[in-house]
Each structure stands twice: as structure tokens, then as C-alpha cells.
Length: 390
Image 1: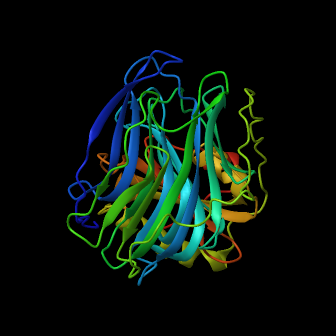
Image 2 (image 1 turned 60 degrees about the vertical axis):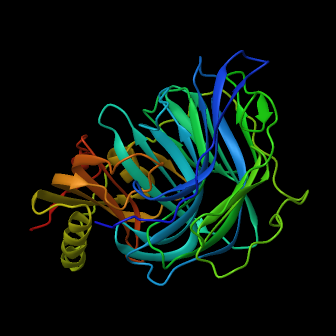
């Protein structure tokens, strides 16, 4: 299990009242916390009737890297609470990431998204395409209908979180990292949120406009507001000196996609006639053992694999929609698992479940998706199932 200890920034709590919706909003300053993980973030919590059905923010990083992309990660991202949770018990998240996927080598930086859902849905994480430093990216999450949330990278629909009820009473943006050896300096700009009619609102809180705050105890980890409750900048062990607001605010940034309340078409299952090739079994067995060990399991009672496509695999494993569909192996292990390497909002522990699933790109051997939950997927609906001896 990774130990997450970190230098601190002190929080300030402010209250405001929405003139448009008469809702109480708690808006906290940017803060880093040592006891529950490496997080430097800003947070807004709706304490009254929820009106947040999504949000967007521009993410910009000048450094996002680390010494070991098999054991650590560093993220700059957006978290959106779901199921009316005010403490981020359930959420959707997306952003830029460098490092591992449940203890397996990845590198980056690359785009990723993840969710943690009620009713045993558990935690599931999905990797995307590569991203660049010194480039502004739009991270956007909004509720569409039928317990589905859409995720966008710029104007590209990169994922769908399913079986995840509305609405949102909480959102965060900032950085998360697992080691003091990473290098991360980034900003989150122009955070806005959507009401339930699809209208977007600038700034985090809906009351008075408070002055900027700036805290720097326990350097080198720090964060500050460029513009109060709208634009924040953070740094952790990057080796770069504090600067004026980061670049990336140009007019060329993509405009957000406005929410359209619709129902996504479910992926239709297709049963493959091709079994897992014998030449791939030993590698999948080894990966199953590694993934299970990295999820805290001391033993696995059942391990199975099937050859399918990525979209089909995610339909069975998590219900998620993903934006690539190459041939993959879907592996499902049964045991007692703790998602020690999960990316979680501040204050949340590691998700747990009796089933661990992950997909492996059949061409490259890279892990693309993984998660833990209480829900067992029916692999036989995808094709011939191969037992992976443990």
C-alpha cells in the first residue's frame, strides 16, 4: 500500500448564498492534506437543494512526471460528486495523469477518467490518449439522463459513467500524487458548473466575491488563487519557482459542450467464437497475480479471461462507455480486493470489492482499464472463457 504523507496548506471556509437559486454553498480555499493522501485542491459543496448537474474546467500543466511510472502517479484533474453526495462518497473524475495503472507501467502524461458508484458498482478507472504539457485541456463532466454522466476531453466524448445517479452537491479540482518524488505544477482555470436546466455558471460559489487567498506553509508544496474561486495554481516538487498566473488562457481554447438531456445507446453484446490463445495464457496469469497483489489480495479464489473488444469488456466489467474498441483480454478475479492505487477525492478511503477486473490490449499487452466492485460480470456472454490457474 502506498503511504501518502504531504506538506500542508491551511484551509479557509467561506459561505455564500446563491441569488439565482437560493442555495447555500460552502466554498473552501485551495488546500493540501497529509492524512488522507497527497491532494492540493479546491472544493465547492452545495448544502441546500442540489442544482449542480455537471461542471467544466481548463487544466494546464507545465510539468507532470515522476521517477517511476510503475509505482507512482501524479494527476491534475476535476472531480464531480454524484448521487447527491456531499462528502464525495460517489463521484466521476477526469484529467491529466502520469504514472502507473494499479502498479503496472504506463508513463504519460495521458488522459484518464474514473468513477466510484453506489449499489456495489465500485471503482473503475480508464486510460485514454496522450496529452502534452504547456497545453490547455478542457475537462467536462455533465449528467445526461438515466443515471448516466458524459465525460469530455476538449470536445471529444471520452467516456460514459453509468448506473450513477444525479445530482451533484460537490466538486473539486486540483492535483493528487503518491510520492514526493513526482514533479507537478499546474493550474485549473475558469471552473464553471451546470444547473439542472443546462445553464452554466462561472465561479465556484454563488454568493459574494471574496478576495484571493495565498498560503505557503511547508514549502515546496503550495497552492494559491489566481482569481478567487475561478482560477487556481498549484505546485509540488517541480523545481520551478513560483510565477505569475500560468499560461493557457488564450481564446483558442475549446468551448464547452452544452448538456443535452438524452439517453446513450447501450453497447450490444456480441459473443466471440475465438478463445484466449494458448500463447497468451501465461502472461495473463502473471498479470492477474500482479494486479491482485497490487489490490491488496493475499489469495484469488477464481480467475478467468475472455478475448473480446474494449467496449464489450467494459459493458460487462463496469457498464462504462469508452472511446476506443481494440481487441482486449478481459480478466476477472474473485477474492477480497482494496483499490490501493485508486485516484480518490480528498477524505475518501480506498474502494473495496470482491471482484477485480482489468482489460489488456491484445496487441501491446498494456492495461487499459481496471476496477474493483461487488458486481460479478458474466464473461461467458462475451465468448469462450479461459480459466487462469493461480
